[in-house]
Image (cartoon, rainbow, N blue to C red; front, top):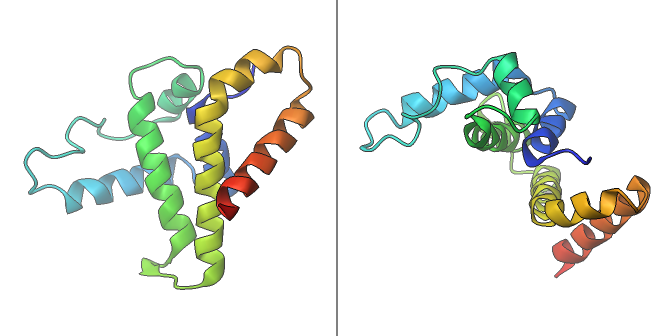
Length: 140
């Protein structure tokens, strides 16, 4: 079975050195930035994420999968587009973010189809088709 959406985003986060500590730091930052908003969009998030929550979300269990996915996307964006809290205005940061976002978006849209194909088509073929579709999407 191919990884679900949460497992895919957490894998990419891991590739960029993002773990539970960084996810919790981003959650705390978002809470502080939005504490005066009513309703607060981060009010219904857990106090902090634990390794157990992440493992349950990877297994399609638990109730925090959507919240983990949102914070993981925010943290990944921050890691790619900022350094020491300051924005990077480089071409490589924008390109990296576009590639990662497009591939995760494409994976999300194709996930159910990939799940069905996974039993009959080798994973390498699925990866190549996903990459080609991603490149075509970026070029258009």
